[in-house]
Length: 410
Ligand SMILES: NC(=O)C1=CN([C@@H]2O[C@H](COP(=O)(O)OP(=O)(O)OC[C@H]3O[C@@H](n4cnc5c(N)ncnc54)[C@H](OP(=O)(O)O)[C@@H]3O)[C@@H](O)[C@H]2O)C=CC1
Ligand SMILES: N[C@@H](CCC(=O)OP(=O)(O)O)C(=O)O
Image (cartoon, rainbow, N blue to C red; front, side, top):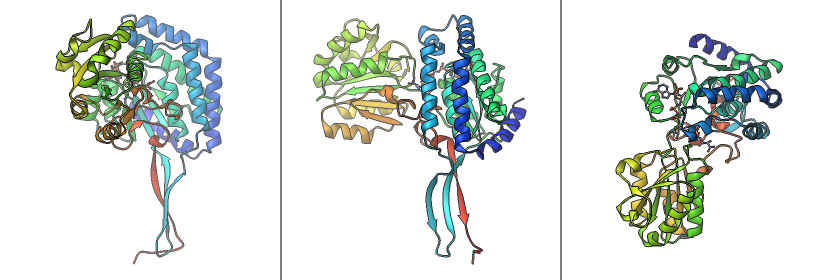
């Protein structure tokens, strides 16, 4: 089955890659129109998915749920993708050799991309929009809970493509939830890229077993470090935002590290604010007496991505201990320092090895929509070929184009 899907995707992508920017944008405009037209159908499919997944924890059910407002935000993202310059054909550097041969690297699509993703149906709008605009075809395998909603969205994509004069096979969904098809994707020879979005079990499996090229969009164990010289109100706001605004996402904070010199001042205030939001703190032995209601944290807490209203707290002697903690437990996703000390801030930005590092800002900004890409295909936590939120350019590769007038190599 997957071989046939790939073959059809490849045939469709060949034509699509040659299409003019305006044509690809027209397909995205059609999609906006069709999602508005089919909004009730998509939301009913989503209600059926939610009913069938009544055992899901609240944060994950929220992730599965689509609302009219959620759809409208996704369509705004589509507009942003339409308005972005077409990456295809863009020059990435040109040189003329002494013999007059011109050599230029230009951006081209990757080809056919497989995406295994969590039960967040909006991914089927934002990731596909980016992939298509960058000239690619996509084979989708969503989390089983989101299958019905994703099918309703894929039907809109396919209609948008056929209405624009292209083949529906540019966007296909693996409907059978049997994980044997995930295994098959890992070895689908000819697939240009496989992007897994999900938890450690999925990522480890894909990284260990895949024989097709992969970009890992890893787990997020993100930290907020509050330095000795920090604006404490700002620190509280940033921690609340990083933990509470959406606890189930990879860019949410899972641990707060606090410099020992401000722990007594900051922690009771922070604990009060967090507890008002229903956050359970897991504190190390030094922080425990300063945070009422906390439970003692173990090393497992520091290694955990809670994805819930739980947060670990640790008091550190200095910035170096904070950086060492992040190096030990972090997942190279998003890390932030709250400080008024310029040199400490710069030190943190340089020394912490992560896809996104911030000073005086929430880790929640690591997101394609927030970065102005209109959405993201995933947030890469590896260093090749993309890092951080993956937008249009991350979905292209390049080709060297030589233009000569009869040159031969001597
Ligand atoms: N960096 C990033 O861009 C992103 C990171 N994440 C991370 O994902 C996690 C949350 O996602 P979660 O709900 O746990 O997603 P899961 O890992 O449970 O599921 C994601 C997808 O992978 C499949 N899958 C999961 N495990 C396996 C396996 N062992 N073999 C084959 N297929 C598998 C699921 O299918 P099935 O339906 O069969 O379970 C689903 O399609 C968090 O850790 C979060 O940080 C999430 C999104 C983006
Ligand atoms: N793009 C997301 C982060 C990606 C992510 O973790 O997704 P998910 O695990 O499905 O919630 C956001 O902050 O909105």
